[in-house]
Amino acid sequence: MGFTVAVVGATGAVGREMLRTLEKRSFPVDEIVCLASTRSAGSTITFRGQEVLVRATSPEAFKGVQIALFSAGASVAREMGPAAAAAGAVVIDNSSAWRQDAQCPLVVPEVNPHAIKDRPRGIIANPNCSTIQMLVALEPLHKAAQLRHIIVSTYQATSGKGHAAVEDLKAQTAALARGEAVHPTVFPGQIAQNLLCDWKPSAMEGGEGYSEEETKMVFETHKIMGDPTIGVSPTCVRVPVVNGHSESVWARFARPISVEEAKELLRNAPGLILDDRPYAPGAHPQPVQASGRDEVLVGRVRRDFVDPNALNLWVVGDNLLKGAALNAVQIAERVIAE
Ligand SMILES: NC(=O)c1ccc[n+]([C@@H]2O[C@H](COP(=O)([O-])OP(=O)(O)OC[C@H]3O[C@@H](n4cnc5c(N)ncnc54)[C@H](OP(=O)(O)O)[C@@H]3O)[C@@H](O)[C@H]2O)c1
Image (cartoon, rainbow, N blue to C red; front, side, top):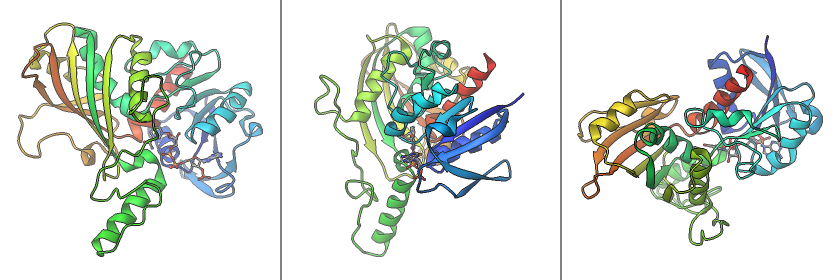
């Protein structure tokens, strides 16, 4: 028996990956409902070799839908998520709209799959891409040695800001190659050959000076791990990479943990690949290697020079896959297994 599955934001960067992920993992889809804004209503998208009509998102569009995968931004999720749930669908939303709602579980299946069952609103939130890949890498170490503090610096790809942001990077890169000035269309400044912090200021109490992306990593780590005492000190940066987020992670645990023990734990953990080549120039996980892959790549596992309880890691993942579409489909797989 299959399911009627809706993808809201089907024409976007994440939505397209959701459709590909459903195909690739042979998710039991009887009927696919592709929804977007009125701008792309009437266009078509290919799913399993068939052309599917894109329809405008409305409460009526969810009639008969059992699983609704949302990737159309927070305002659409706030407005249409409850309508889809009221129509009987289990909603899995990629935006930030429901992540802080105590009645919506926030789930990384490798970390807190048990949370899926408790969803009084019928809505499950997918965490932020940077949080997901960091926690997939840290969970096996946390289980063994209890995380106490994380210092993370992100190097986030432009695809994390949507399809139009990638086009902006490409246009800026081409302009610079022609010796012309850049004219940013999505980013608040030059991203080609440059780095930017391009997120809104955080509205979190006590989060003055931080970006929204940074305080999301704090809140979401606490909610997913179920432990608000874990320290999280984030700095998020956008880099001129098309796809694949990288993170430099320093993590301190409740007890000493050796590089050998950490590598053994990481080698046997789900959802990640340990790259334990000895350090050499260019021998480390890279966004171009992670792009298109389901697994999070973890490498450069090093002891801390000062603190025997701490380790340094380099973590790279496909933000559109494990950071968004794949994580959502993995949640859906657990929902249908209920
Ligand atoms: N990119 C990532 O790595 C990533 C990771 C985690 C979470 N997310 C989240 O996923 C969501 C989508 O991101 P994205 O990168 O895929 O963005 P995107 O490429 O800009 O795509 C946005 C999608 O939303 C649709 N949409 C926009 N306004 C709508 C409306 N009023 N009603 C219905 N559909 C509407 C668009 O349809 P049209 O084609 O009709 O405009 C398009 O399909 C965002 O909430 C984002 O924060 C993204």
